[in-house]
Amino acid sequence: MGQEILVHVLRIGYDGDVFVHNAVIHFLVSCGFLEDAYKVFDDSSVRDLVSWNSMINGYVRSGRSREALMVFEKMKMESVEPDEVTIIGMVGACAQLEDLELGRKLHRYFRDKCLYFSIPLCNALMDMYMKNGSLNEAKALFDRMDERTVVSWTIMISGFAKFGCLDEARRLFNEMPEKDIVQWNALIGGYVQAKRSKEALVLFQEMQTMNIKPDEVTMVSSLSACAQLGALDIGIWLHHYIKKHKLCLTVSLGTALVDMYAKCGNIEKTLQVFHEMPIRNSLTWTAAIGAFAHHGNGHDALSYFLKMVDSGLRPDDVTFLGVLSACCHGGLVEEGRKFFAQMSKKFKIPPKSKHYSCMVDLLGRAGLLQEAYELVRGVPNEADASVWGALFFACRVHRNIEMGEKAALKLLELDPGDSGTYVLLANMYVEATMQHKARDVRKMMGERGLQKTPGCSSVEVNGNIFEFIVRDKTHFQSDQIYECLIQLTRHMEIVEYFPYIRYDLLCDSDVYSAM
DNA sequence: GTAGGGTTAG
Image (tube, rainbow, N blue to C red; front, side):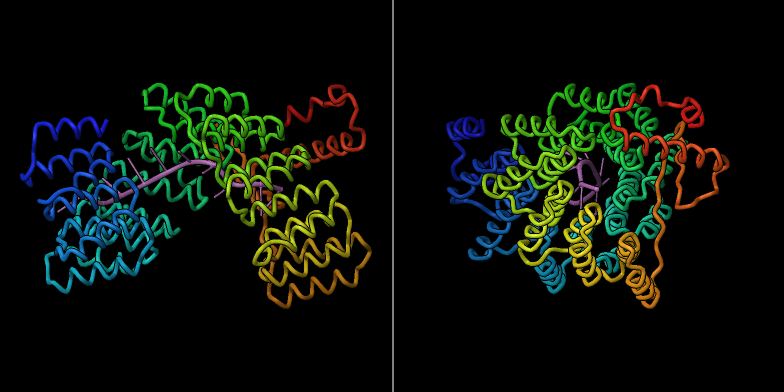
């Protein structure tokens, strides 16, 4: 297509005219035909600064900053002086490539020339500093700007939000003179990324009361919040809203829906949404594979993985995490070993510590402690706490005190601040009637000034989210909740010891009426 | 020309 346009333009003739020439480059770049654009650019005898800028910015906008950098280097070699537009493009490239040093260099270059810093240039620089984690340099620039646009504010809000400084993000958000949807989305997304989903949904509600119309991006983040909280009712409400207001079901939005239904436990809806999606990408497939893994449906996860690969999409490290965890939940040891090996050999994806922990968990649960231990020892550059943690868990399940002790001591060495390890190790000793050792561990924990941080869980009922910590008695129906838990535990114990019992005859209707 | 989003083990 790009080639055809190019041939056509060449036929009408534009040789020698730099304006026509630049228009052609600009046109090809904006259509995404970067190769063709580069050809025209490279063959030209009349290129000027505008041609260079079009190429550089074209690459940056397509996320191909390495190539932008190469063009920039070439430009320097030909002694063409960059201008503000060049610098904005290159600063954007530094944001993408996380090259803080080059970003600073460009900043200094521009300042030393005593050139005027326009708002877009300041914005680009702030964004670059934010994306490279230099919140202070971004803030210094922002504070010195005498005029700001919504974009300036958004960069600051989303920058702080991404680094978990939500109070600062919130403060700027409140301070802003005039807002549009983008800042709301940046803040909601920030809360979700910081695992503070309840606050994200509160903001979403606030938006509703202020009559601000959510868009696709708002929905993606809010659905992700529901997924984290297991808030199915709110998730369904959002799904209805999307349909009713005819929001565009983009790949991201569809994926967010798939993930929400999966995490909230509705596998039928997960699959329905997945199959109704007009376009799916590797993230969508990964979400579906993860859904099967969560539901203990190992074989379906694996068959979807094969379908995904068949359809020509490339799995990534996250996909493999889903595949391995599916094998783990389904007890598919042989398949787990196979896919773990395929991951690096066939797909050239080096396993990360999460993949190792998953494999250790898989082998450990199956009782293959020795194989698990050897895998841990074989982790390149030393296994981290998550891998040793999986081994420790397996040892506790299979009551291998000796190996469990080894794993726990390694864990204490790697992460001495994790109070959970001390508690679990002490419990393991108690179960093995090694009270003296248990006492030593508790003593060590006390000496290091550690306290067990209480676990927290949440549940959604009729659209309200309730959070609980250990031994929580604050809920007004606390007594009934505990009564229900006691009965459920009793049921589970019976089912564990008598796995073939007629469960339907066992069900006590009182338990379910209490829920 | 510069801003916001989806998948990550136990």
